[in-house]
Image (cartoon, rainbow, N blue to C red; front, side):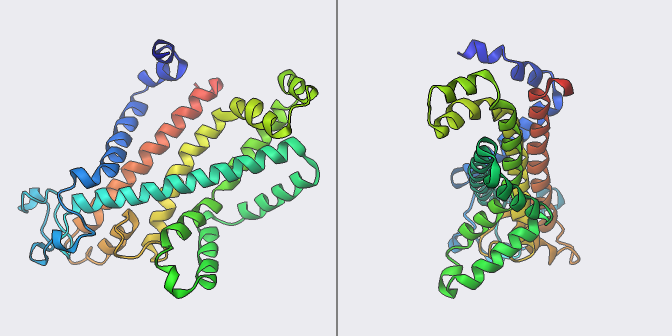
Length: 300
């Protein structure tokens, strides 16, 4: 199995693409560091006893800062490296959960719309067209506002992560639905699908076992790109003060806090998490472009 994997087209083109290799290394380092944050971070930004106000606003080490804090500290004395690792961890968790929900919802609706057609297809596609007319951030803002109106005030703080994840997911499902629907239109007329239908297999079994595995190529590309979009959308909402609260150090929250110190000279509080976020999003997008080229031989 390992030898067949190493001989696959994806590995062949990956080893000959310097951009994909660099992007994969950057993404692995960032994602690995984020999920290993509790073990490799020098302090826990959630734990008030792990940092001191006396260490606040220390510059990075190359500007004469404390060697204990290579990238400096914020106004509360929290190590920037630890804050970024924990912030990336939270941003990635929200992004992955939102992308997963959007994938299940969008692919499910797209498969059903393409397979059954008719009125159900028309309803799903009209809803998708309406949502495409709105930017993703406006859809997320709308869902967030509705949740604030429906949920009791005492529950809003505890459910911020869940609400934000759902808002991002419901703003990203359309691409999955449209791609799955278009792919089903092509696959359902092929012999293997027609044979399964003639044999009397249940439509759900036909869609999941026969059609879905054959349309995973374009869906994997969208999953990669939408993961970057979900992370960036979370950062944007948190930067606007609508996403996570200030005591939850996501990357967007750290950037919003850093904006307050940009003109006072403490530039690292803003630029360090910003550069980190840019590297994460760009590396994931580059890998998405690579997967698009692999699954579409005409673009190689």
